[in-house]
Amino acid sequence: FFFQAEDGIRNYKVTGVQTCALPIFSENNKNSRAYAMRAFIHMNNEEKMDALGDLNNAIKYYSRKDKTAVSYLYKMRGDVYKESEEYELALKDYNMAIKKSKDNDFYYVERGKFFQILGDYQSALQDFDKALKIDNSKISTIGCKSLALFSLGQWDDAEILINKTLILDPTFSRGYELRACMNHFRGEHVKAIDDILNALETDLISSKIKDDFFNYADSNLNYTLNKLNAKINQNPETVTWIELRSKIYPKQLKYVNAVSDINRCIELSEQTDKDFYKSYRGELFFRLENYDAAIKDFIDLKIEDNSCYFIKAISECNERKGSFQKALEYYDSAVICEPDNIFLLAKRAMLKYRHLNDYEG
Image (cartoon, rainbow, N blue to C red; front, side, top):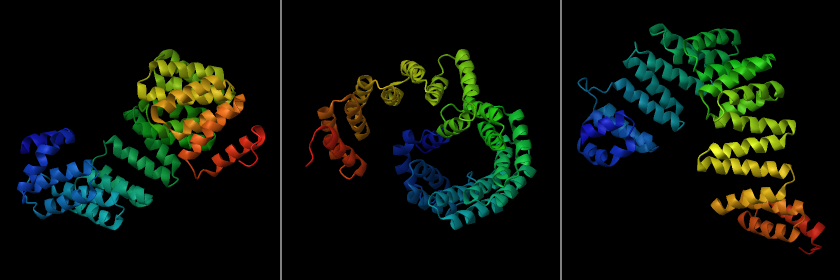
C-alpha cells in the first residue's frame, strides 16, 4: 500500500490512492517521507491545515537517510503559508529551503515567484539572477526574469530576454503575452495582435489571453479579422478561432456573420460548451431583434439550469416583442429569484406603468 500510494502520488493520481494511503500513513507516525506524501494529498485537496500539520511532522522527523529532501519540505510548507496569506512565515520557509540547498536554482526561482506576488520585483529579479548563475539554460527561469524586468519598467531588457526565450522555445506563451503588452503600449498595434495570436496558438483555453486579445483587436479590427480568417482557413475545425471571430464581427455590427460562426461552434463543441455558445447566440439574436429565436435559446438554457439570468433575458425579449403579459410572468419569476434586485423591480414597474396600466403595481 505504501509504495502503491507513493507511485500514485508521483504520477499525480492522488484521488485514486487517497483511501488506501491515509490509514497506512497514520501508522508510520515517525516517518518523514510518509508525512510528506500525505501532506501532498492534503494540499491537492486544498486542506491547508491538515497539510500544515503533516509538513510540521515531516520536518520534525526528517533524517539524512530519508530520500525526501528537507529543502522541498520547507518549500511545501512555505507554499501552504503563502496560500494562507501568512507571508512572513512563508518567506522564512523559502529562506530555509535555500539555506539547506544553496546550489539548487529551483528554490531561488520559487522565492523569486513569491517576491513577485508581494510586488517586490527587485528582490524577485535578484533571485532569478542567482538561479541563472547556477543554471542559465532553463527557459522558465529566463521567462521569470523577463517578467520581473517588465514589472520594473525595464522593457528593453525584458524584450531582449523574451526574444531569446522565444527562439529557444516558440511555445512559451507568457513571452508572447508580455511582448504583445509592450507593443500595444508603444502603439505598435499590428505587432501586438500578432503576438497575442501566437500566445493563443500555444494556449487556446486561456481566458486571460483571450481578454488581452480583444483589448488589442480593437486597435485594428480589419487586420484582426484577416488574421483570424487565415487561421480558420488553415484549421477550419479549431473552435477557438471561430469563437474569437464571432466576437469580433459584432464590433463591426456584423451580427449575422457572428451567428453563423456561433452555429459552427455549437456544431463542433462538447455539450458543456454548447450551452455557453447558445447563451451568446441568444444575445446576438436579441441585437438582431429576432426575439423569438433569442427566447428559444434562453428557454432551452433555463430548462437546463433554471438560471435567473435566462429568466430575465426571456422577460426582456417578450417586452421588446410586445408580449407584455408574458414578460410580466417572467419578471415575476425573476423577482422571486432575486427579490433585492432594484434594477429588476424598476424594470417590472416600468412595464406595468407603460404597457399594462397597472399604476398601483
